[in-house]
Length: 228
Image (cartoon, rainbow, N blue to C red; front, top):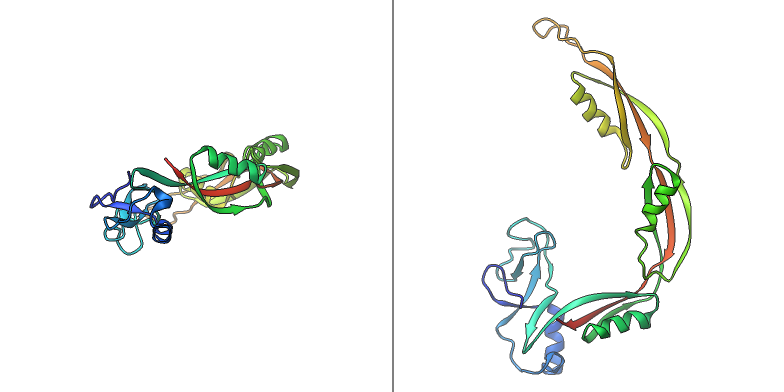
């Protein structure tokens, strides 16, 4: 049973309310009234649930994250939720939904072209990292290509301390780049009473990773309403 984290009201996803009104409640096991059920929302960050009366304008009371429609509720004697199923064929995805006590299919998506990337210290490691991201239900992998060849590079910064130098180098690195080592070329000078103070110079040895891209067919997708 899903209730508002603040007031305790039972929650009802917005798309269910229309189905119950059209079907007289039969889709969820009978019953005519749902006056005590309110449309709800859930915070994707802290997973707290709120009814519309308690949620605030558009954000979670606790962390400020924008809220989304609640995915579970109760009606009559059943607890229901939205669930997603994938398969190498549409029939396989639907069978998975049926095995999970399917009540109604809400959305179907056919297989489509998709891409993932992986990074590593060499091409094989980058390929393995990308391969882990390919869904096991993918009907087909179409191949891969080397997007970026890994290579070492250097950069130089001026700073008044080693920590400041490290922070500046990290700010220059791209996503996935590694700082291998850092060398002081010229130590900083303090000067006298702040006069003549000069930063030191540091040289950083870095490495840009290999990047591999895999193209594949995304699994067939079904979103359904199922009994919990």
